[in-house]
Amino acid sequence: MMAARLLAPLVVIMAAMRVAWLCRRLPLDQLIERIRRVPTLPKGLRRPEAFQKVVNRWYRWLPPRGFRSCLKRSYLLLDLWSRCGLEPEFHLGVRTVDGTKDGHAWLTVEGFDAAEIPADGYQETFVA
Image (tube, rainbow, N blue to C red):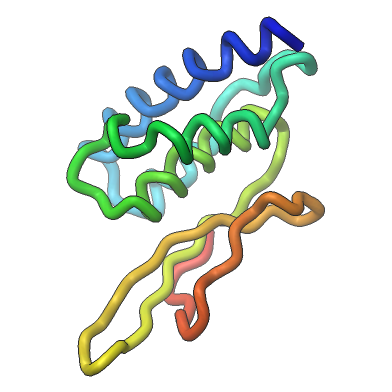
């Protein structure tokens, strides 16, 4: 338990560096599949809630840079939750607010309560 808590930030940093590297090199569909292709962590380190807490606390300072917070968080959690043996789905959606289009990214995982739900009014445009 203590080892998992100490290693979670290190795993998050490594995932952020990997995601940042991949984001500069691949189109979206290939990027999502490549982010998912990760080795599964040992059972004692598979703590998706712990990774989510670290990402939620640190995402502003983690790479990749220049992305909206929801997209960055979704990329990072896609990597980390895949390492936990989960099978997250990546979603992109848009909505129009006062004549302006607004985008949002989120993840869903069947059977995992901590997965995010889309904000009201977003129409899915991409699911992988």
